[in-house]
Amino acid sequence: MNRSDDSFIVHRTRPLNAEPTPTALMSGFFTPQHLFYIRSHGDTPELPADHEVRLSGLVTSPLRFSLERLRREFPKRKVIATLQCAGNRRAEMQDVRQTSGDPWRIGAVGTAEWTGVALADVLAKAGIDETRARHVAFRCADVVDIDGEIAPYEVSISVERAMAGDVLVAWALNGEDLDPAHGAPMRIIVPGYAGARSAKWLLEIDVRDAPSDSPVQARDYKLFPPSVARQDANWDEGVTIEQMPVTSAICLPRPDEPIPPGRTTVKGYAMAYGRKVARVDVSTDGGRSWRQAGLMSERTTAAWTLWALDVDLPAGRHELVVKAVDEAGQSQPECLEGIWNFAGYLATAWHRVIVDVG
Ligand SMILES: Nc1nc2c(c(=O)[nH]1)N[C@H]1C(S)=C(S)[C@@H](COP(=O)(O)O)O[C@H]1N2
Ligand SMILES: [Mo]
Image (cartoon, rainbow, N blue to C red; front, side, top):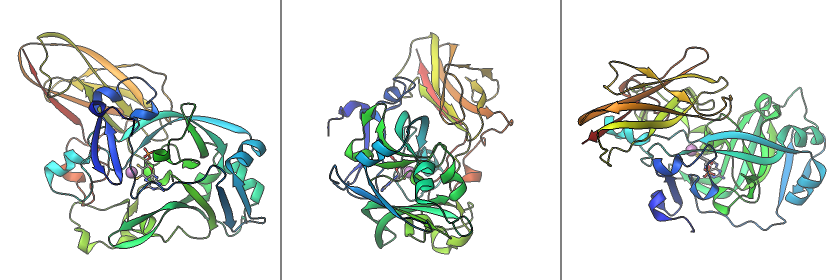
């Protein structure tokens, strides 16, 4: 691995699961591939360069395509989108009560310009059976263990989402070919959806009348209320996590690095699904008073907005807080208690950082 260790927090080495430090995450609007978080359920499969993806199911003409054929036969598309794991910020939720899963901090998120072709174009070429097709499943080359059930990684999205032009069969991230860890040679990118739907190491696309019944789709990435324990979960009642709710985080300053009294820039990211971030509110007194941060990048519905605010901090201990508001006026919950869930998903409460000044 060519990742410089002090900019990466490694949660597990086999399979590799790691995120950039908050400082590294703030290196720019685009997250370089070598700093992009890696969330893998199983070992990285090695696929040959001429690997072919099969497309079958409820289509008129099943087809197979290599990366080379994809590039040759379909128009190239570039999409700027943020990918975020549903488990981002789980560590904070685990401070409320234990959950399953790795303790991701605020870095299970990254933004890239993805290059590929529109899944819609590929599906159109195969011809979808419009009366019966409802879901599109992505089977992958890695084998995963979900609660003891061992099966290929497989997820699905609705046909409507799959046919929107922004869902890609992608081969590059910020202009670089995908690294093996990020799904080489071809992966799916579903902008705005939980990272789990953006299938890596794509093997097969299956057009179906029902969602995938694989363990990842049927049991993983489902949201339950705080009162439900894993052993009591009725999986059919869980909410399938797709669109990611409005969220934000403070990346700088860091809680573990004391800062001198005076002017400090508070910086971080914010995003909302399907709507733009309208406003980012920052507090330096634990949420009693708020100021509006400046938004540092052009706002889009698919990518994060970086924000910054200069504040004057006297010597002492301060609690910095951030919350984002989207264009519908929707914001983040104040605390995690009410949204705690046994798998630790969607930890989108106000983000708090305690800093020591002086
Ligand atoms: N085949 C496969 N695809 C996968 C995964 C996986 O383990 N196997 N993990 C998913 C999850 S949970 C996330 S958050 C994203 C992470 O993508 P990245 O590792 O490129 O950041 O990939 C998704 N696609
Ligand atoms: Mo994820």
